[in-house]
Every structure is written in structure tokens, then in C-alpha cells.
Amino acid sequence: MGNTIGQKLSDCRGDRSQKEVAEAVGISVSALSMYEQDQRIPRDEIKVRLANYYHQTIGDLFFANDNHES
Image 1 (spheres, helix red, strand yellow):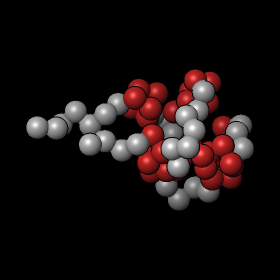
Image 2 (cartoon, one colour):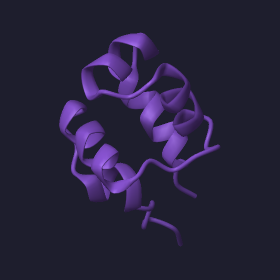
Image 3 (tube, helix red, strand yellow):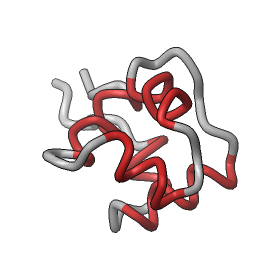
């Protein structure tokens, strides 16, 4: 079982505030909050910005699953 997109985004944010990340990627704090709570999925343009900001690939951040299941 892999993490949800929201969990991955929250984990990547770490100690940074939602405001800091939202301003850096050009979205509202409420939008970031909804993404982290799995209430909304970011559109592709925002996925790219978030992946770049967190130094992750889009695939790892938004599409990769835990493939180590038995």
C-alpha cells in the first residue's frame, strides 16, 4: 500500500509552512491544503511546479505506487 498523493505532498513539505510552499509555486494556501487532504488533484501545470519545487519527478510524486507488495 502506497501513500496517497496528499500524504506524499505533506511529507515533501516537511517543516515548511503551507503558505511558504503555496507562494513558491503560485497557488493559494487553500488549494495546497485541499491537495494535501486528497480533496482535490492539482492540474498538470501545478503538478509540474510542485514536483520541481520538491525536487521530485512527477511520476514519483503523483503516479508511483509501492510496487514491493508480495
